[in-house]
Length: 181
Image 1 (cartoon, rainbow, N blue to C red):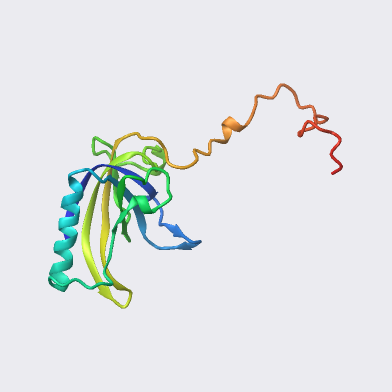
Image 2: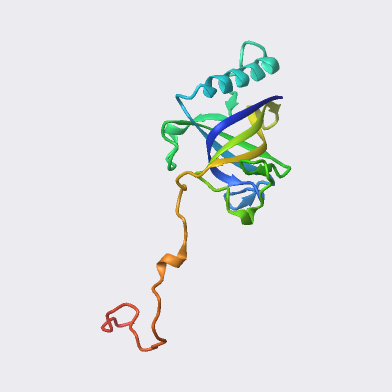
């Protein structure tokens, strides 16, 4: 296993406090997808470490069926993925999550969210079993770096409502009392 510290990357699909639910099923793993701009120098280091890990397992002639945890964000239709590489990292043990001063965070702190910038500690490892041949990333920990635009909907329902002046039950909520239902 080779450890990498990814600096100032964007966090997507974080499941850091509870295990990930995928297609309605609990994966029993904590997970995070990390977005790295394609032009960043750390991309070359990531590719090098992944290739070295694969060659250590399989030799110089890598299997054609080998799957990689690094993928092209341009091939995904998610907010913010264009122009980035993505790495999905998982772990069965809840990862360390800290703020910029290394103080442990809990979910109720609401400091970590999809779209914020983080440093991430991951291990690159190679799987070769009945489930396939893959170069994967294990998630060790996340450190909050700075805020970024949130991915997806903020879902703040408070903005959906007006302040009510009275409890008049006769108000037509649709503004058209001619609707036959």
